[in-house]
Image 1 (cartoon, rainbow, N blue to C red):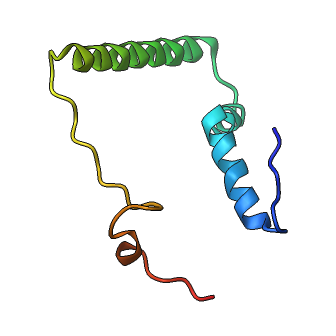
Image 2 (image 1 turned 90 degrees about the vertical axis):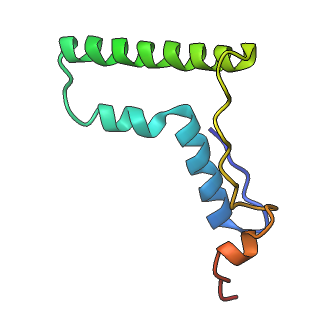
Image 3 (image 1 turned 90 degrees about the horizontal axis):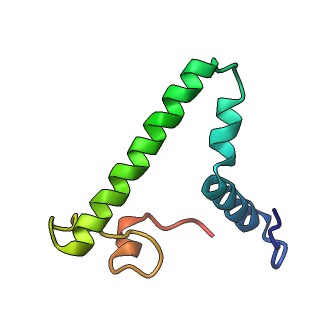
Length: 93
């Protein structure tokens, strides 16, 4: 995994790296490998994950087909959102 550091801004590069690692599931895998997991527990976990994925896919398909209403979207408080500056206290420079 590679992250470019621009203008010696290591903090921003570290944030980008953490986000990429989170997306790839590296943190989840590290946590799982801290302790031994019995094969039966592993099967149960993988089955539960598969069921969760299938339910999520079915729910998305039902929304696309118009069978159920789409969930309400939460307002974004990130960059570019209206009122984002008011929601976050200003940082000292």
